[in-house]
Structures are given as C-alpha cells and as structure tokens.
Length: 202
Image (cartoon, rainbow, N blue to C red):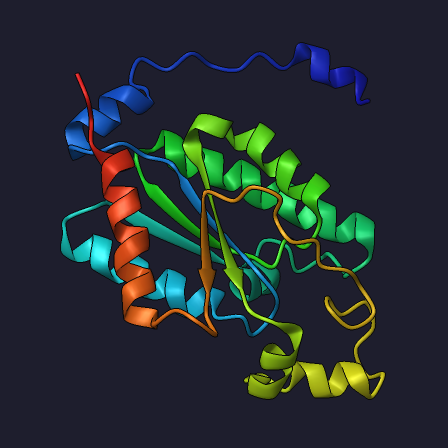
C-alpha cells in the first residue's frame, strides 16, 4: 500500500450522477458483455448500442481491443495483467456511469472472481451482466480474426478457451445462445430489458 494514499481526499462535487440522470432523462449503468473470443459479444453490443442511441440514450462503448491499444497498452496477458486490465476498465466504466452514460462494455473477462471484482467496483445496482454463450467449437469455426488458428499452432499463449480457462457466469442477468437464438430477437430482448432499467422512477 502506498503510504501517500492516506493524503488523498476525494473531492465532493456539487453535481452528481442523479443530477445528470435527470438531465439526460434516463438512468446510467454498465451493460457488461462476456463470452469467448468470436462469440459475438462486440457485434451484439454494437447493435444494442445503436438501437439505444436511436432512442436518444446517452451511450458509450468500451471494447477489449480498443482499450488494449490505448490505455492498457502496457499490459500483457498474464493472469495478473488480465486482472489489472479489467480493474482499470471497471474504474473507467464507473466514471462514465457517474457522468450519466449507459456504458456498453464488451470483454472476454473469463474468470468469475474477476467479474465479481468488476461488480464490486462499479456497484451491483449499476451492473448488468450479459453472457454471450457460444460453444468453443463454433467460435473456432468462425475464427474471424484467425486467433484460434494461431493459438492452436502455439503462436499465441494463454489464449482463452485453448490454454487458458473461461468460466461461464453462474447467474447472468441475461444469456444469449447465439447458436440457437436469432440475432435480431436477442438484440430486441436485451434492449427491452435495458429500457426497463433506464427508466427513472420517482
């Protein structure tokens, strides 16, 4: 622990999350999409955001590759670095929630303990977990980025689903089985669930 932390006193701002939510006309929270690489997380998250944006919802998207190329470009893929990657993303998400935005976060986030950490940082009342359930076989079949092929060839180490584990969420708020459910229907179902939480109740 840094001893200087005891000298840090957070500033108490006059305008808070509740004020911004009232101004925007909707609640702010995080919608966290988790699933294997190639499961369809980013595709579904992007279309969900598009539908909400058309309805006038203030949104902001956070995606794994984009964060890795910028803010977290100093982190690798060890267990410790992966956890730190997610911790930073959770803290960023929390700030966006305070700003009044609906955060659309799409990250593999393979371990249950790390997802619990994320919930604790953001706050369980401001967190909706969406599990994009797609079998490893189907993700490998799609292999849009060619990552599974590289992982199988040993060119990528600690790749989730191959030589690093993915733990299915125990009790997600929403679950989409992409091999069974029509994409359009899944998006409508997610948006409907979010609209209920977006509504400000006096």
